[in-house]
Each structure stands twice: as C-alpha cells, then as structure tokens.
Image 1: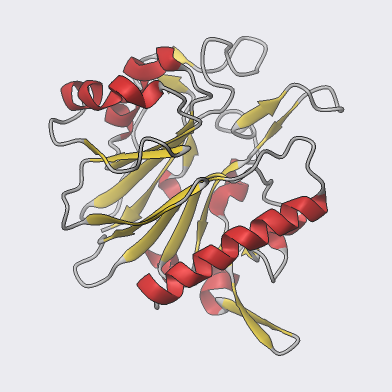
Image 2 (image 1 turned 180 degrees about the vertical axis):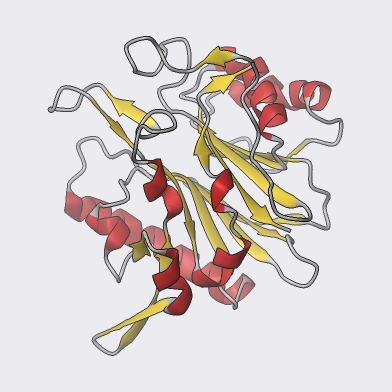
Length: 283
C-alpha cells in the first residue's frame, strides 16, 4: 500500500513540503519521484544529493507533473524542486548549507522558507554547534529583515541538532520551544536588554514510536550502541504558526508500498540512512 499523503483536513489548499537527506544514493531517483507523488508535495527538498539530481528533473516530470522544475544551483548541497509557478516561489539566497525562498502561500502574505543541511553532529562539540548555529542565524535574521519583516519564517531540513540540544533551545540561538501556545503568545524573548525572536518546534512530536520510528536518523556509530535521533526538523516563527497544519507533520516510513525500516527496527540498508519528513502549511 502506498504511504498516505498528509491529511489535509482543513478547508482549502495547502502547500506541502517534503525533505529527505538521500545520502548520495543515486539508485533512489525513481523512488524520490514516487515519494513526491505520494506525499502530494508542492516542494521537494533533498540533502546530500551527490549526483542524484543529475537525471531527476525528467523523472519527476514524467512521474509527478510535467511542470516540476529544479530551482537551485547544481553545485549546492541542498536541492529543491517544485510544482509551484514562478509567481508563487522565488529563490532569494543560495549558500553552501542552505537555500532560501520567498513563497506566496496566502493571497496577501509571503513566507520565507529556508531549507538547510547544517554541519554534521559527529565529532562536533556543543561549543562548535553553538558557533555554527549562530553563523546560520546571522544570515537568517538578515534575510528576515530584508525579505520577510512579519517574520513568517519556516526552517526545515537536516539541522544536525536534536530538539533538546542547547543550540536548538538557547534564547540567543534558535530559541525553539516545544509549545506552540507559548511561542504564539510570546514570539520573542527579552534577555539582558535584547529581544530575541523564537521558533516553535513541532518536531518534538516525532520523538516517540507510537506511529513509527522515534526519529529520522539512526546513528549506528553512537557510543551508546546505536540510537534514533530526530535531526530532520521543522521550525516556525510565531507569525506562521496559525498556518501550520500539525496533523500533516510525519516521518515517511514507506515509498511505493516498500518499507524504509528493516525487521530489526533500523533503517533498511538499501535506502538512505535518513527518513523523509513531510508537512503542510495552510494556503
């Protein structure tokens, strides 16, 4: 059975986004197209593509929609495809570790969507994580000031941080809270005379095994003997929370009726070491 797409229970349309770190698996080209079709994605984002993207445009156009087009430079680490037309989405900034877009998801408002693959967590100290995160956020805040003053911002991708890591939760960094209510009511925090914009992190809901694996990535080299981690996440600024459809955020565990999880409960070796995530924003 094909994996179910996001349950769009609200009236109207939604902009559906799917992210997958494909671990440079060229053999996944056809499966990536099936993934985009099954999730009903308007925007497909891939990390660690290697040469996967080389022949993917044609496959996506044949399997998903003839209008699918590639939006990002071929030299980057993050690649984006979309079914949206040019009036709905535009590339605003392209860097080695992220791609940023202005996306029109509502008739009168624009959303800043930033798709990232940040530095690997392996052999990186908490101090290095904080420094790398700060550098990313400097660029993000500049984009918000220039492109999205209402701070309708979503950051999604392989952030190589856990939801509870200091770099994710500290007020001067992502300031990401598990509570949508808190962030909606107080989208900024004031510390030592400075105001810091916060994020809502709905990815905490993926840290359990009630509807699948308790994360998106299994780290087999961990000193604890191997464990699941939720490093592929979605973060939203307070102004964007009302548009977020929480019931659509999920980890994809099958493509074309084939499971991505082996019998031992770990990622099946013929797939990527990461699992895809998908979510939707109300239009």
